[in-house]
Image (cartoon, rainbow, N blue to C red; front, side, top):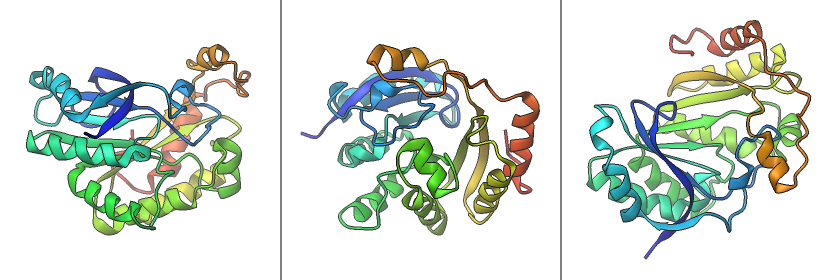
Length: 247
């Protein structure tokens, strides 16, 4: 029996895909984003071991609230680190007629086997991908997350090539991700994709800093303030590139 390590669930997610969603936060992430508000999901050994059937039974208790667009969203941590479990979960979800969404940073993506064949099947079972573009520049991405972005951007190109619907998110951090030139380059990359339905700018906040303290990890952005409303609007315009559905 395939099991997954689950950090937590949320019964009424309203910002994790279309409609009302049952959100499953999986355990484990290789990125070390400086602004992460869930560092307690990093460890691959944490969380609770769960089965697909058990999670879907829990999710369907709330199905009456989903409406036509709702369903389940798998987030993290990084869900693609548990791709075997994701496949089992989404196969069973589709048998139940449930809309499926993945919220991912894309870091595990590879065109090597066996990952690519698994990812190809996962795409067939997934209605929507929500993908973070943390920084368009490889070196700045390493400074921000501890990892490069080449395979993350490659995943977005792959999803574009197969026509899989994508929402893109960008966390706007003053001094790190809000430079106009990098925002323009990010917007140009987004415009090169054929499958992006929505672009969202998420203003930085430090609400999760207490978790870093609790885990004994230094939070390096302690003096960083949220972006101003003007800078958020500026980012939306630069990332838009004529798109109609930027929020």
